[in-house]
Image (cartoon, rainbow over all chains, first blue to last red; front, side, top):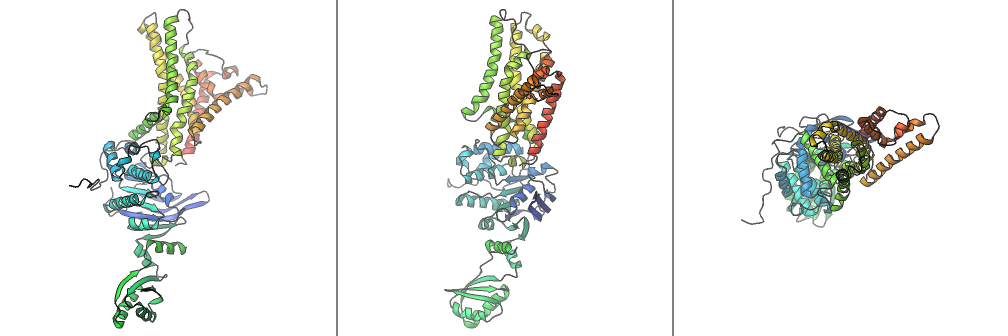
Amino acid sequence: MTTPTQPSVVVENVSKWFGQKVAVSEVTAQFGPGVTGLLGPNGAGKTTLLRMITGLVRPSEGRISIEGIDPHDDYRALAAVGFVAEDEAVYKHLTARKFVRFNAILAGVENPDADTDRVIDLVDLQAAADRPVGGFSKGMRQRTKVAAALVHKPRVLLLDEPLNGADPVQRSHLIDLFRTLGSRGYTVIVSSHVLHEVERMADRIIAITDGRMAASGDVRSLRALMTDIPQTIRIDADNPRLLAAALIGTPYASGVKLERDTIHVEAADPAGLARAIARLAKQHDVIVTRIQPEDESLESVFSYLVHRR
Amino acid sequence: MSEEAIIVDRGYRPYEGARGTLRSSMWAIVKDGYRRALGLRRRAWSKVMPWGLIALMLMITFVVIAVAWFAGDLIPDLPSYAEYFDLTSQLGLLFVALTGPLLLVPDRVNGVLAVYMSRPLRMVDYLLAKTAALVSLMLTFYLVPQAILHLGLAGLSDDGFFTYLGENLDVLWKVPVVALAYIATHGSIAFAVSAFLGKSGLASGLYLGFVIITNNVAGLIVGSANFIGAKYAALFAIEQHPRYVRDWVFDSNAGFLIMEDAGFDAWVSAVCILFVVAGSALIVWRQYRKLP
């Protein structure tokens, strides 16, 4: 097993094409302990990348390793992996408990019954565990799949759109679960096209568009790197009109908008703007109650990433 | 303490205990195949066809033994071990038509291949486990009634139970060899057809249609066509090959065979069976290596 500081999953210059269609192009990334969000619009190549990591699809070029072993050369590397596929991937005639138990036996765990009970509890599926999966809602099927992926206590968890169909309570529960696993040092890779979910789950994101890696890192760092796009800062103050007028005269504000008691400032140099606000507020005797970046959300960052292409 | 309070998994740790081997994973697939084929742990209607065929198979055996017991003197030409295959091979064909698609199709349709292949398991292991499930089921289907027949006839023998067994030791290898010829021919085609279709019922129907049509067309061409090389159409009477091998093994002649009519020796049928198995395996492998 790798030590926590080492990346568990390494993707090196990986490409995959299906005939003329390039699904993934020259992606290089490392995934270590914690939750990494694999983010991209539908068809961006997230699923193909995950399937390559799990050994289901062989890369056309490049190399993938899990804990130092290429799953395409040595399938035993997959003993450390739990995978939730985007497809249904369940036997509808089996009960959730039997399906999870079958996965436990496939994974070769020592005590399949105990491990099955443990993960059924973990995904909060006790009440429905003995009902056939065919009668489940989409969200319950997702939880069944998550339980099946966790039953052998994997060190690397790959989740392809795991929250699809789950209701808000289930989503919250699953997000907490993934965060917990990530915080305990496990490598959790979650693909999603729902930005706010990724934002809640992931410490780090890897954004993919058109099969290429667009960005990698935490959201705030990524936003800070986009120096060519002015950041929008929201300022609440007791005399916004006066402060807005003062800000217009500084080189730090490239645009100022006043909206009721709130000022929205576009700043190419947010640090300089912050210093200017402090100085101007003191100078004009204005009380500033809040300064907040408005476009440091994943949604803003991602839209910048996508629109820049 | 509040009853609502529960800690379900404090201190999650990766599994570091003993792990089952590849063989245990494959055995899990084989067992799942048995349950699926026999409708175990499923609704009642799933059990009707497989257990109905098994019951018919056993019924034929018990009828033969009963006839030998009550009217053996009146009916001296009871079905031999070779002829017994003729009585039961159509049931075997139906059983394969039912079982082969059930073993392969639902995994693809339900997208569960991704579940298997994200485990430490290769596609070849998965296919071998499915083949093992089919072969062992079919061997049981063919051999258990034959064993009952053998023991029944031994029990009724005027020479005594053990004398009969001693005099018929060759049955112990001949019956399994012939059963394997039937299973190899029927099972491999059933798998090849199932590898392409998304519905088990459709795969069963197409498989049966393929076997019946190739037999009839081959018989028609060999029997009535005059062109040069017409006799080679007999090679496509796939269902007849295990029968010819059966006659070869038992040194018997249990009925009209297209291959014999066309002038081929029985070993040609044995080679044809090998070709059918190899061809089917290639087809299934080419289809599955692209999946999931």
